Amino acid sequence: MEETVKTARLSTVALIFKLILDFFACCILIGFVWFPRDLIRYFNTKLEITNKRVRGKIGLVNTNELDSPLNKINGIQVIQGMFGKIFNYGTIKITTASSVFEFNYIEHPNDFKTILNNQIEAYDDERIEKQAKKLASAIKN
Image (cartoon, rainbow, N blue to C red; front, top):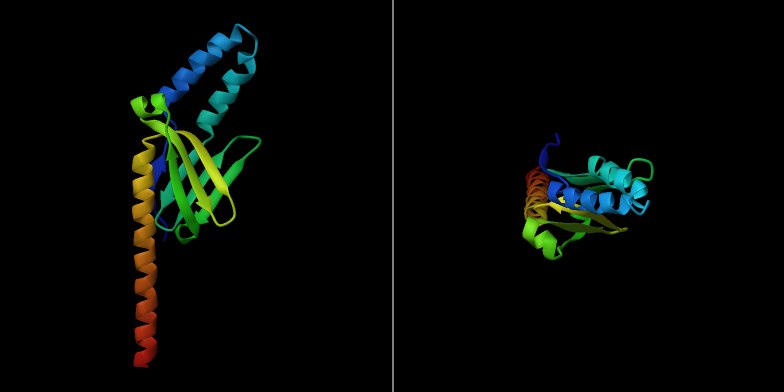
C-alpha cells in the first residue's frame, strides 16, 4: 500500500511577486498572457513523495509529468536565487535515468530535498531487508 509522505507546494510569495510583475506588464499588454499563465501554473503544479515513488505534474494543456520509483532517482538539486533564499522558495531538479524534471517556485525546497533523500534511503533499506528475508528463507528450505 502506498502512502503520501510529503506534498510540495508552490510558493505563494513567489506567486504574488510574479502577479505584481504581471500586473505591471499588463500595462504593456504582455501581462495579459503572463497573468493567466502564472495562475494556471500555480494551480496545476503538483509534486509529492510517497513511500515508493515521486510524482509530479506541471501544466494544464501542455503537461510535463514525473512518475518515478524512488530507486530510479539519480539526483536532486535545489536552485535558489536571492529572493528564493529570503522567502524560502526555489527550483527543484529531479534527475532520473531517462530525463531531468524541473519544478519552479516550490516552497521550502531544501526540506523537500531532505525528505526525498531520507525516503530514498528508507526505500533502499526496506528493499534490501526484503531480499535478505527471501534469501534466508530460500537457504532454510
